Image (cartoon, rainbow, N blue to C red; front, side):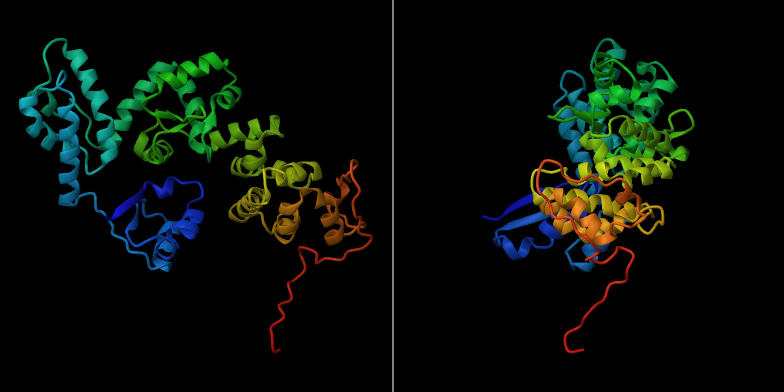
Length: 391
């Protein structure tokens, strides 16, 4: 019997390129023919190029496609059938048809429907919702933008106004991974109990995972909130403000694993380039970063992420720091043993180097180590020599 594994929302995966390369591309070669893989994703740049370059079977689902609306209508019909105490069951088919059109082809819109209908039922104060109630043009917002507007306006009221609302959402929108309640408390300078209450108030917009960390329930929300034309002046959230809040948090919690992974990214994104280079040129900080991970593979991933950040942020070749290029050359040795950092720095840069990483160098004081007396490895600024066989 044929079975299918479904991988949903590849575009929301923090390491989508790794999943694409290591799982999706190799699936047919390593899995039995009866086990297929179906992946859903938004057609974003790198992912779309990966699909094209690897000749993967793909189909673009158009929002206005008749089949898509039929599926949404069927889904909404099931939702309404489960709300017997809220919606008049004799009107289910007609209501589902109307609501599917208001969804504008997005299943995410339908996920807000049960709570929206329950709230309408409470306001009505007597009797189930009829076709007339649901079909009223102002009863339920049209499209995802309309639904977001209604829910985020309600959140703004719950948290006490625009200032608190924007302070809460800015770091969540800017963060590359979910934030813990403790981190949000530190960023917003609130007691943890108060922060817990705020997160609970936003439970229909924020997802709290099993590890207690918090994120928006869908990436589309972050896109909508950070686009002033879509969200409007009052609900718009400046992503740069979030980067600044997280950069300040990283600066005040330097040894925190989150800070080690994301400090350079948020500092540069908030315009604090000098502070980012200060970290990259700090031997002790670099030592902490390359030590993040329980094994060689995890440490290599951490170092690789920092190098990739420097490339994407446009500071890989910056004259202010040789560290990104140095790490690119030393990644294999350092992921194997982070304690080789001092040896690698001296072997590649030399004792007499003016590089700030050499100036801040700290030698291992609790174990023997090999101290290079001269430069024995290529400087990260030196051109690579490619030796071709037969030449």
